[in-house]
Amino acid sequence: MYEWISAHKDVLQTLASVGSFMIWLIYAQLLYFGFRRQRRPRLIINRGKRKNLDALCVISNMSAEPIYLQHIMMTLETSEGDWTLDVSDHEADLDDDEDQQEAGHNASHCTHQGPLDSGGFVHIGSFNALKERITTIADIDESRDGLVFKAVCVRVIGTYCSENLPIGAERRFVFHQSENSCTLVPETWDTLQFSTRRQRRALKADIKRIHERQAQGEGEKAEKEDREQ
Image 1: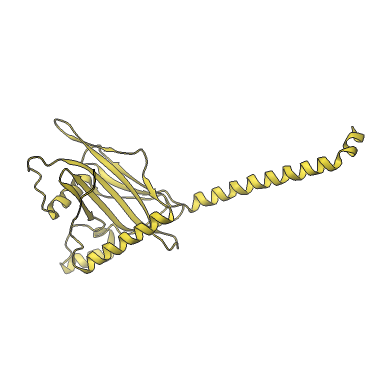
Image 2 (image 1 turned 30 degrees about the vertical axis):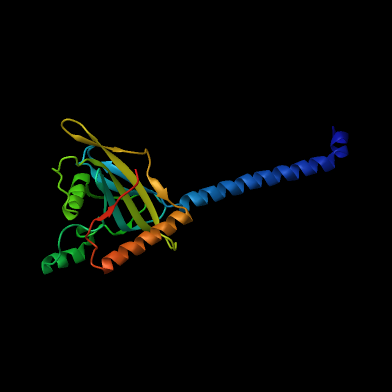
C-alpha cells in the first residue's frame, strides 16, 4: 500500500488539490447566496381578517433590513378601464390646527409613508374602503348598468437601505362575485417582486411621474389607464 501511494503521490496530490478547491468553491457559493438572500428586499402584500372586500390590505416586510414605504399605488380594474390612485396617505383632511398638531405626534394617523421594520407589517385599510375612495375621486357610478369590477392591483414602491434605485412589489386580487357576496382572491400565490435593475429603473420613472402630477396639483386624482386586453 505504501509503495502504491509513493508511486502515485503526484496524482493523489493533484486530486487532493482539486478536491480542496471544489470544497472551497461550494463554501464560497453558499456564503454568497446567503449574503445575497439577506440583502434582497422582499415585501408581501396580502389580505387579512376576511376574504371578501372587507378584508384588510396588509403589507409585510420580510427583508433583513427596514424598508421606507414611499408610494402605495392601487389600480381598480373595471370593464370600462382601469383607474390608479396613490393611497399612501389617508383621506382625512388635516386643515384643522388641532388635527395637524396631533398628526405631528403620530404621523401614522395621516400617512402610510415611513420606515417599515424587518418582520413588521402595516395595513392600509380595507379593500372596500380603498375601492370606494377610487370610485368617489374618479366619479364612477357603481350602479351603472354594464359596469363590472374585475380586480384590484396593489403596488408598493419603497427604498431599501442605501441603494440608489427604488424597490417595489405588486399583487393582483380578482373579484369573484356570487349571489350574496364578493370574494377577493389573489391571482398568484406570492407577491411579485421588482428587484432587477430594469424593473427598478421603471419604478424610478413612475416616482418621477407621480411627483410631476403632484406639482401640477393632481396628487389626489385617479389616473385612468386603458390596458389592452
